[in-house]
Image 1 (tube, rainbow, N blue to C red):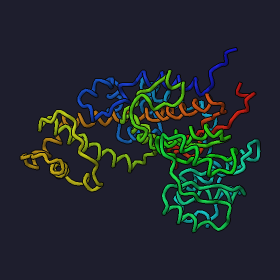
Image 2: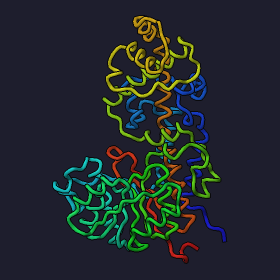
Image 3: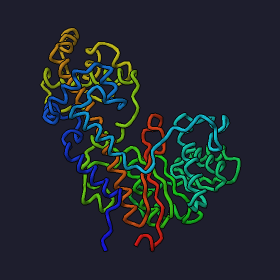
Image 4: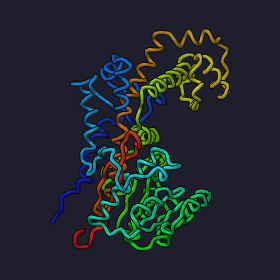
Length: 428
């Protein structure tokens, strides 16, 4: 008898259908494909954002509120993107400020950034609940564990033994100095990306049993896929994985590892992967104003290259320092052109006059508004990547759930994949 598609499979299909509907918007950077990128954005959408105040633009760009464009086609699309996350089995809920036995003490917080403190407390709380209810967690392997802060505190708070697997020997040495008990051992090892057999051997040599929780907090690019595939190959019974740095996956149609992703393939460019990596971070008003300034200069210099100097092919001018965007536009232009080896005999006063022309500022504003629209699609792209991994695990006999484990304002890459191997009877 045919079985019904899983929730993750159905959601992968749903996300794929949505993203392909707006492929031309998110697939390419606005700047890199000027002026063709203008054709991808309906003019009424751009106008809706353009007519807003800076504060209202910030509310949308930071995803704090879509009320400035409520009851519009664009707001419906943005809300649809947010609703794509409704399937998550676990939603982060801010707990009370009352300390619990999972709360880190002042001494335990020493040397840890706020983000790391938050992540460790949330993971300790989750693993403790799983351990007490129905999971046979005998130990853990913390992959890419750095100096072992998570490993050390997991072992200490939950009274379980673990291995901190870290490729940087300096981190391993420093981590060992922090360990007072013998509940955590360090292993200096590197899981070679896409070499599943070698990665399986490394994990086998460092685990105490197949019931160790395989934990990967913010595993960069293809490392997450390598860990997942190696764990499946070793029949590890449980894993908890958080992806990040999706740009490192490498663009193309072969990013997916599941059978489901072959059916609902998403051709992801480097621009789309960058969008998935960056687009769900918080944005304060001060951050927004700085972003506005940076984009203004970045868009401005490319318009200058295109319209004034006749450079019709995109030229990567490179990132700048914060102070580069504080002075006159002409100073920024001369610095970048000098670095690129492009001669320019136009006077600084003429360049600044050109920059502040109404039609130039209009184009810059339009491109900035296009960027605000495009930015909203990053979370949906990330969901497709994570759902592919979840489907891969399900296809190989794991019960798999995606959930929000952290406050996204503190830790933007807050969706984790938690998988438990089903018995053969349940899998069948």
